[in-house]
Image 1 (cartoon, rainbow, N blue to C red):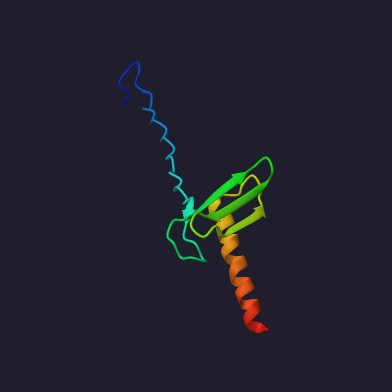
Image 2: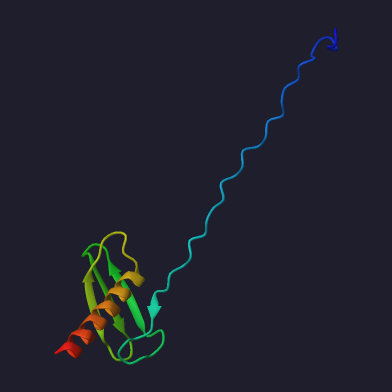
Length: 96
């Protein structure tokens, strides 16, 4: 009685699926400040994935640090490890 004849039930309009938002991963630094000579952006990091060795070296005073790396290691990880090692050595000398 209340329906308006043929085709009274219509299709629902489908909504477009929301596009997944792409997150931009921030670019990490690859040059850093030297903890020994204090020159800015003088330390460069090199990652040798085949040899599994990461190296950071100052272009000014040639201070250098090598460490083992894994496939997820980034330049900033090697630099941070170097800084941690420096701090640990400095605190060790103060305790003596």
